[in-house]
Amino acid sequence: SYVLTQPPSVSVAPGQTARITCGGNNIGSKSVHWYQQKPGQAPVLVVYDDSDRPSGIPERFSGSNSGNTATLTISRVEAGDEADYYCQVWDSSSDHHVVFGGGTKLTVL
Amino acid sequence: QVTLRESGPALVKPTQTLTLTCTFSGFSLSTSGMCVSWIRQPPGKALEWLALIDWDDDKYYSTSLKTRLTISKDTSKNQVVLTMTNMDPVDTATYYCARTSYGDYTYYFDYWGQGTLVTVSS
Image (tube, rainbow over all chains, first blue to last red; front, side):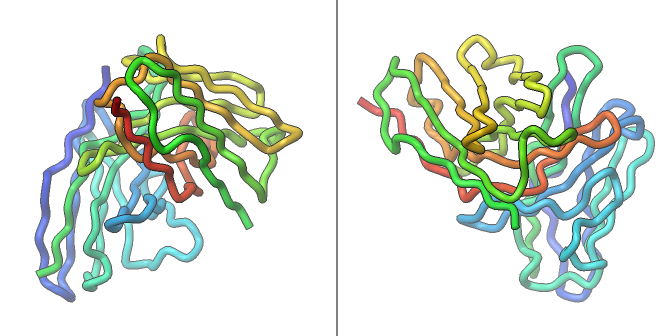
């Protein structure tokens, strides 16, 4: 089955740029979606189809995907960006199903 | 305005069957490209996808749980129901339903319910 690998944690100072990676075999051939989840809340879609943003999501959130790694980039990080972030793909290679990464805790120092 | 709300028991006993209902508004499951999924999250752990049903009544299930899961829809009531048999304490989790949009050979979750915590204990 398809596996997505995320670093457990990423730390960044306010105003800096955070990059959260999502690794998978030839993930560049798939569409990657990203979710932000704050404590006690439901996840929120922040990037879909590798690099598109839903309405209401700040331009500071961007995504890229190539080769074996997809990346969520958060520019000018704010304290309010501290959350867990999950990547997700649809795997149709064998069994048709959704795959989530293990999640990355973003800490704003 | 799209909203989803999960409902069901907060506590179930081991071996029992869990039935959860997702009641939604702001979209129709008869519209091409619209789907609803169930996703769960054990306390302190990652998201886990369970099942998806689409506008054409196609259904997809988590490989590891598919023998225990059934997803169905009632388009007239704007509801999607998930049943999970043979519940175990490891199934304790917050269960979310989410509107699922179909794109270019992919699915993603653009609106989520608030989630409902289900505890499995005798």
